[in-house]
Image (cartoon, rainbow, N blue to C red; front, side, top):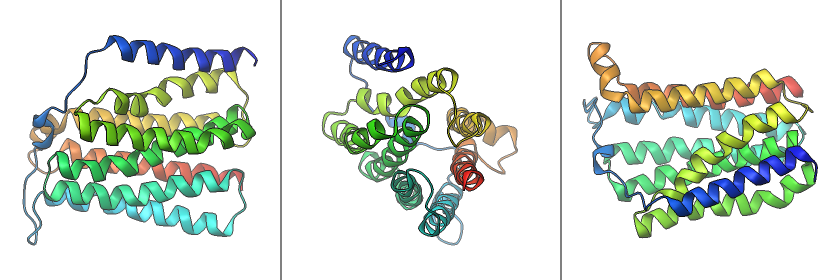
Length: 239
């Protein structure tokens, strides 16, 4: 292994050690209380429910485009867009009745999208064969983190799935040359993801600042879907 690979492995080991040092993190039940609870046409929490339609649109658009294009690592990106489409359904289901039981169906497809994106960038910036070997274990780890949270009420492993790749990917971008993707496209995807997390945290603040028109969480869905759409844009550039 060369030094960039050692850096990736080192980050993984540091994350594992850090996880062992952190106390279990239970799901905060206030997470389920969103700023915009308005009902539209009989749909509770309507803005947070219907904004998930964009994930379905982007996911299906990606699947349809990939079905006709033999892009590198197509099977990884098919998994990514399948996960994105399922996020739309899972997140809408969750927002109809926000609770831990429904949140499972929101987070499961998200881990498929997270891990597929990570595997795709490992193939792009590191090693295609290694990414192929790691793809299924990464998916299993992602899904397993949600199952572990569901049965233990401990979010530590899910936190690794959500944020671990975000630590490794910038290292890959700086350490390894691009094969197909423009570096700026990857940074744009990460930027949309960061914006989504900020909007999620500022849900009520954004809702108040915008006069109750739209909440931070609804805008989070739009930002996250835009990031997924940028992935499709980047893939179309390389075709």
